[in-house]
Image (cartoon, rainbow, N blue to C red):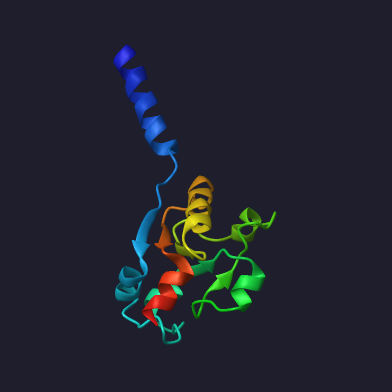
Length: 132
């Protein structure tokens, strides 16, 4: 009887534990896309249709330059979490900021919201600029 209770508890904890996001470099991201990051991301390919690229910087930073195809959802906005309502929890979401700090926090928040395939792009926009 006690073994069954412990087993049920372990199963419950494993299923309710938040997903753990991954972190990858911009080089790895570019390789996964099989598209040079300096070129415009083509929305017609299967890979890019299934993913969401999110720039979590402020709108001012976004307007100064961003990765083509990125959607701007400001980490500091009170509506950050609400912006992801209605999105599929299994959709792959790549997040980046200027250097990687805000996007790491954003990735953790998306984990807590139940998103299963969140990837933080290490080095952020600065790393992207170095690749161009």
